[in-house]
Length: 276
Image 1 (tube, rainbow, N blue to C red):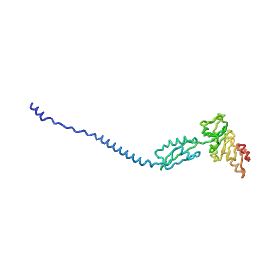
Image 2: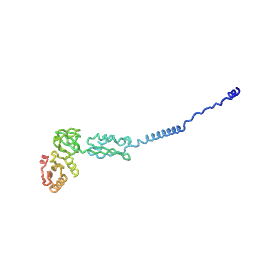
Image 3: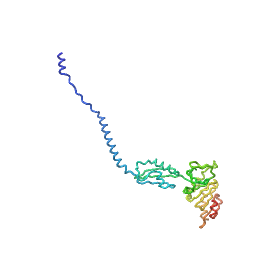
Image 4: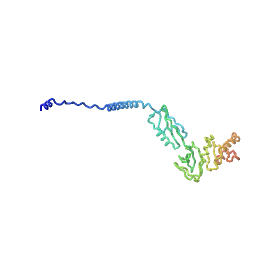
């Protein structure tokens, strides 16, 4: 009993516990997070100060012939001074494409320092007349626009087409001869372009597939017949005109549909217009 009492009087030493310190890895993670947050705040402050300086300084529009630069920019909805990083190039391209019915493709690119380049690829557009109305159409013979005034399509190539059964904006032209292959019109236009003559053409008469003719400069009617051997026919026409067309002669009808037997006629203005 004595030993027990002594033990109780002396007592068992009481240990005072210390608070557990956070794990060292957690402290490091907390410090890293705080540093990252401070860095982000610093970067944000710098961006808010600097970003307004990133402005479009110049806009280059290229490839447009049917539309003015001002029209393209109005479709694009961008202008000098716009925030550079806020411009969505694909959205701008889509807006321009939707704005112009004669536009085929658009690309928008950025160039240093802060130059925006809008490149337009336009459709090959021609127009024709049917029942007193004029219609613009593309290479797929899809109608793009209609007007009662030919002046609205004056920048395009006028083509007389075979008999039409139906024509409407947004749809492909339907011809009376549903089996007609219209590729000869495109082939003729391409040959004239290669020869550098297309800019002088005022009318293509493609009403008869095997009797096509071309009007150049409003003073020369060139009959080509079938769209075959076009290079030879055009070369022959050039040779004949250089040899026979003299100063003062204005209106000429030249038929080279037969490479072995061409005909050359000088016409009066009245006869030329009447046969047009």
